[in-house]
Structure formats: structure tokens, C-alpha cells
Amino acid sequence: MSHTKTEVATGAAVLAVAIAFATYASQGIGLGRATDSYSLHASFRSVEGVTVGTDVRMAGVKVGSVAALNLNPQTFMADAVVTVKRGIEVPDDSTIAIASEGLLGGSFVDIQPGGSADVLQPGAEIEDTQGAVSLITLLMKFVGGGDSSKSGDKAEPAAEGTAP
Image 1 (cartoon, rainbow, N blue to C red):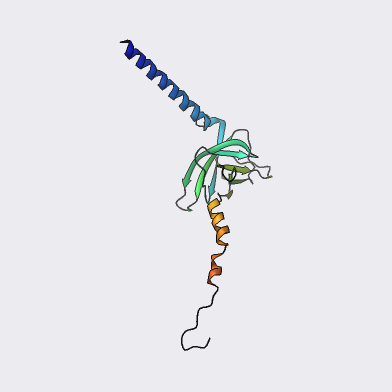
Image 2: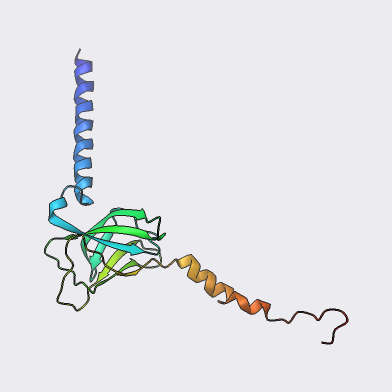
């Protein structure tokens, strides 16, 4: 009988640790504090490297996170919903961009505030966006020499029986 009590106590301890970890993790990505923030919307050409939970930063300081990413079937753009901490007012002429922490670092969403006195209201859309730049694409352009149309500069040979 004491062997069964030990197994139950061990199982309960493991379950308590799992619940504590899940609570801590949900607070870390902002699931537990929906009232502390407001949402803004933006459409990007590419959100490569960004997932739900990715940091949203202003001047390098985390001010929120990415709450949702969806493909818009009409525009084929990535629609993003980002949350920003209450008390941080984003000017309505701000720019939002996908940025990289470095060559090997991860991506984050960077809000570059504008100079307007008017601020975005909760649920508003930031219209000036810049999508992610693929490092592989840039390297391929560099290695490939840029414009591929230069390889077809040779004139076609004249047809038989015609003057060159």
C-alpha cells in the first residue's frame, strides 16, 4: 500500500510542476495579460522568420508581441496582428518592419515611430510596412551577378539566304 501512495505523490508532484511551467510559459508569451495591451494590424509581403509570440520592439525595447499571422487570400499578403503594451502610444505615421538581430540571430517586428501628434487607436492598421528580406535571396543575387538578362546579349544568327 505504501508503494502506491509514493507513486501517487510522485505523479501529483510531476503534474504540479507541469501546470506551473505551463502558467509561466503562457505569461511569457502574453497569453495571461490580454488587458495590459492593445492590438494593431499590418500586412506584409513576407513574414519569414516571424511566428506568433515573436517580439515587437520600439528603439530596441520589447513593447509587445505578435498575436496572429494569417494569409490574406485576396491580396496574398501576410496579415499580422501585434499587441502593444498600454501606455505606449504609436504615432499614426509610424512604420512597421520585419528586422533581424544579425546574420545568425532571429527576427523581430520593429515599430519605427513617426512624428505625427495623432496616435493609432486599438485595432487600427499600420499601413507603412516592410517585409522580411531573405538572406539567401540576397546572397543568390550577389553570387549570380545581379541581372540575369545580360546573358542573352548575343545576337541571333541570321537565317539562311538573308544578308547579315
